[in-house]
Image (cartoon, rainbow, N blue to C red; front, side, top):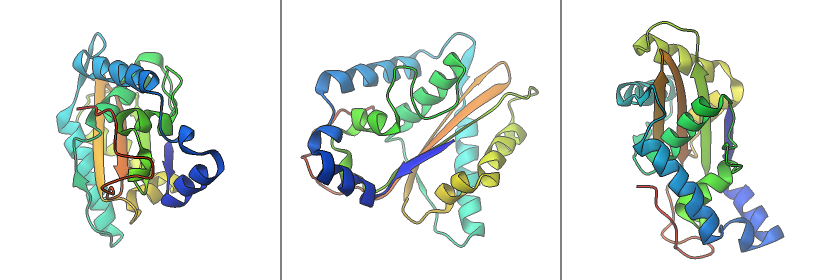
Length: 201
């Protein structure tokens, strides 16, 4: 599944509903960040994060962009906790999508980590899983990535010129994998509503 927004959407929300939509209450944000940090520090029983497959998916993303004549993304750990936590959440609660089991959608999850999301002119997320069995190896990572290539919305995110950075999270359990890639554009020094925020590590 894919989800994203552009600068145009941010400015529309700001004009229609004010800062309350874009800057979360501190307690609400801290609650989700704590949830995410706990999931990444202590993977659910029988599971493990796979940095090797995270690197594989990052390489495949840039390979795909090169095929389409687009510049490469830079790998970043800025949203690694967010990406890994959402992958683990999907695995643990057996769902696919962009709304966490705790109720936050993609926008809310990102606001929990950065506070004023208007610092980011564009953000998006791709999520997928491969639960067809077999070894959780490079070939499985490639098969999962192909799901994104075969989907018009996911492929559009992969090749978009709005994005310059990506954080990739992959978790494995019993040979099955769940993956999340979070994309974003070059952040501004200051957003529309200040610079405070909660960092995910």
